[in-house]
Length: 115
Image (cartoon, rainbow, N blue to C red; front, top):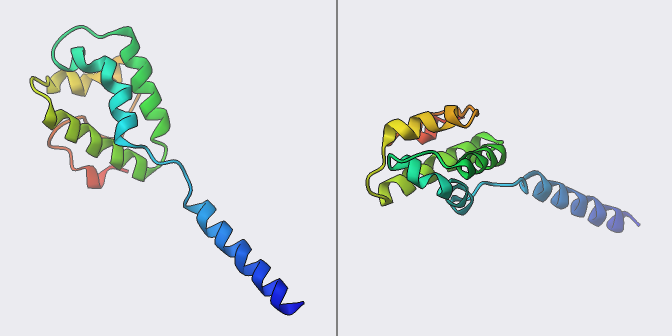
């Protein structure tokens, strides 16, 4: 009986450990697909109505500090791979969509310091 109890307790601890680390993590795919409707605005064009829906979904998904750092890095990587990004428009995007993010969308942002 003692061995079974010990095994069950070990199993409970393992499940609890994995559950603690099973929180959702934002992926670059989510960030890119959420902000794809914003591409025109980020390149100097008009703000598409669907853009803010995507921005709000990315902000809602990035709940933890790790998620926000990941989103920051994904934004920087995406911006580096595109041409003609208007960083003034990028910095205005959260405000235009009525959301706050804890970092400025800029190639100079230190994503490791985002909390």
